[in-house]
Image (cartoon, rainbow over all chains, first blue to last red):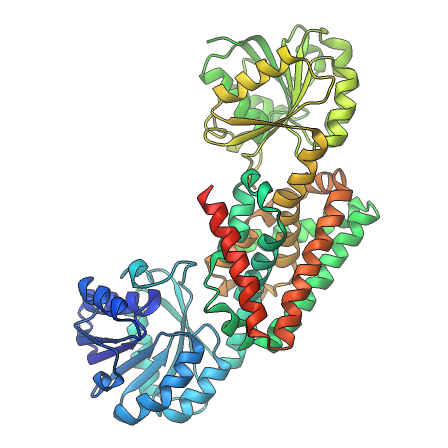
Length: 278
Length: 278
């Protein structure tokens, strides 16, 4: 069933491309158009039937009734004022950025029908080449709203994500960033740091544990500096919480305190088992 | 093809049970017997056809020509002198402990045909209930030797692991412990610490990254305190290396230094991609 007439995807990478593919496949829009700085990405998006038309020029988004920003944070912030001059006031606007406080406060000033989206369905892989229409099935998509949010726009975006197979959950932008600092940004920081200290010659002794623990360290070094800087305060606080916990464990190892180690490890196991049961 | 007449497995849990199952399935021994403190584990091992006979009494290991310790480190150290009085001098003895320096130095004094084994094929799961004969296929098994090691015993143990499907690699016990501190113990410590600081109410927002990063935090809180304490010096050193790396990343976030973040993240990605290509 058609939800929109013309959907514009700004940034036809892994996430933007997968949204486009899913919308096309499910027939949720009359037309899907793509904008990208990269000609190759547009050509491949068209070849994969993710988009009907593509352009490097923002003018193509005119008359869209849904526009989704799916580029890195700094590119969204640069493109937004230009896009504003082209689209109609009624167009629903969303983004798929990994942090929300900074983006939401900027975009909701520019677009009266803005809703933040964060589909928790990424991957350490990138690009339209890895896009696939099932990416969001059985995943969670966090939507962010503020007291300026219009109910009708929210209902439409919620419906879109559900049609793409995702459950939706609504948070404020600042609670979103607080939570994601713990559940995504801190794990990435630890993975980046861990793989950085292991001598390369020892990597051939890696077992499944190290591989799993560091998988996300292969995430894009283009995207992640901006993600970390756009959630700086939460991240600094959570790194310090982590450092204190690691210190406790280190001190227990240092003084050969088996009982304390057991208590820390039992609590860790309980929490991880709880996560597994969710 | 039969490699041994009577194989004794001391500790019929995940690893011991899987070795027993594989030896039985491939017909590598005339008889496989199991020793465990737990009657239930022995009964299930027999039911799964991992062992021909089982007992809580060490006396059953008499006349074995291969004996493998597959209990936690402290249980091995306690059982070893008792086992020594029962088995013949010609019996090949090995263990599957996660650290090797302490164990190898004790066991090679007691058993003239001792070789250390460390199959890198564990799991956060435990017990004979999870044992399976294919556990070691396409895995790496590190063997440890010293200048006391007999060539004939080493060849026989090497052949055993290859028949179980593992590649083998020989290290000294102390190099083994140095490497595993980086590739296994440090990742476990970070996973234990990470899952310990995330508020439980935020866990439902976990995506694949957090799940993977903390999977090994569900490892046994019975086994791991001993593993950490038996490799204490390496672990303390490596935690400090990690803390220094995390500090560098934290400082770059604090001073909004995007260039340094990019350099750290690019190096992390290169190392992780290298690991993926191994």
